[in-house]
Amino acid sequence: LFHLKNRNGGYTDASYWVAWLILWEKINKKKKIKFEIECRDIDSVDPKYCKDPIWLLWEIIFYECNERDENTKIQIRSLYRFFRNNYTCGKRNSRLPLLYHAIGYLSLPVKFNIPIRKDKNIFIQTQCNINLMFKAKKNNEVKTYIPPPEKVKKITGAKQEIALSKFNSLLEIDELMR
Image (cartoon, rainbow, N blue to C red):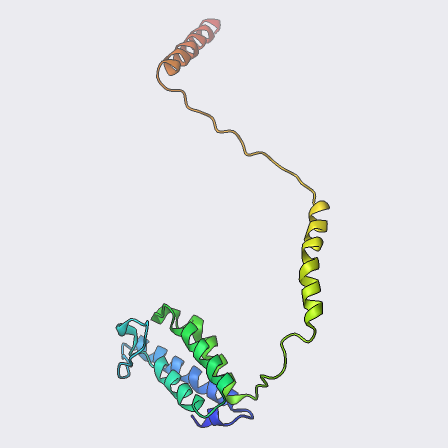
């Protein structure tokens, strides 16, 4: 919690302790020592996964988040919703970047007043011209179409008997020629 309050460099230390906790739990799991916390009441998460220590980290993040501005709260709540969506223990490691991102919002200076796009007119113009660019590439495309090979149909029934009789007669002729 201390490292989350440090807005000038606390990200590295907080990330270290998250990684340490994950590794510690992994080592204990290999030793068949189960580490569970008190069951948390988490919406849209199966109760058997509510004892995972990762939820304790999210509680710490939300505790610290209460002292921050509204934009940070919105961003962290959205990351939390992504994290808990269809959560299983197997998906935890693939979703750790969302947790680290939330830690970044708390421990790094974030300026929400800087626009994502400086010039909206240029953005709109590039979006309009992108279709023309793809059309130009499509015209210069070399088309080498190779048709799929035709499937050989198996002969059944009366046609099969006729074919076999012809083949047998050819074999008899071949025997006579020798």
